[in-house]
Amino acid sequence: DAKTTQPPSMDCAEGRAANLPCNHSTISGNEYVYWYRQIHSQGPQYIIHGLKNNETNEMASLIITEDRKSSTLILPHATLRDTAVYYCIVRVTGGNDMRFGAGTRLTVKP
Amino acid sequence: DVKVTQSSRYLVKRTGEKVFLECVQDMDHENMFWYRQDPGLGLRLIYFSYDVKMKEKGDIPEGYSVSREKKERFSLILESASTNQTSMYLCASSLATSGSREQYFGPGTRLTVT
Image 1 (cartoon, rainbow over the protein chains, first blue to last red):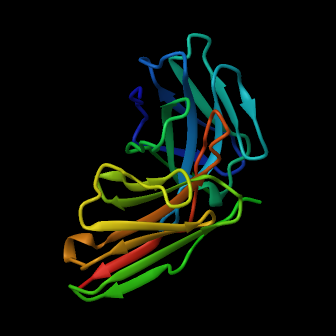
Image 2 (cartoon, chains in turn red, purple):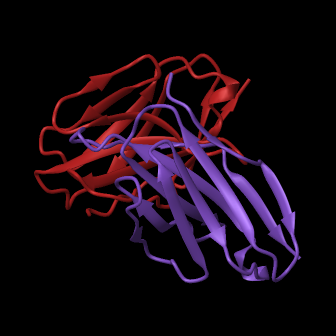
């Protein structure tokens, strides 16, 4: 599975969009990009995933560059409850376990 | 709404005790997983199961066993708990027929072995 690189921490003002970047320059054609988040002392929460196209759901949007070497998770209107560690994971289609790295600690401030 | 539940949020056991951690999912998922999460080490896969009565070892199976008698239930067993098994234990499930196989996690069980 391709390795991912994320900034260790980011801040965002409440009500503004939070844009979390992820670099996965060694991604291969059959690897999905997944985003999870983990609020302190809770299990990881699935947010969104994509293969080639941009994706949007009720929680977030995922923008994948055309060469697929990087992606951005967008939380359109961040709230204090979005404060969490966000993980970007790249995994081959049909793979088993999810390999969580260190992630980005997002702090939403009032 | 997807739901994975774990039997306990917090558990304290003594060294040498047999410990059962239960996980139940209501999404009719074929695949189920047990991870442990430790500071600085991320999530590590202990065991997974892709069908009833089937199991596969993950990266760190030593000291653990699992049981899957029903599709919705996956149990993690610590035969003789030791202090180095103090950790956060996370259960997850995924749909086998989905190409993306995103996993859905339970709330976790924080186990302390004294």
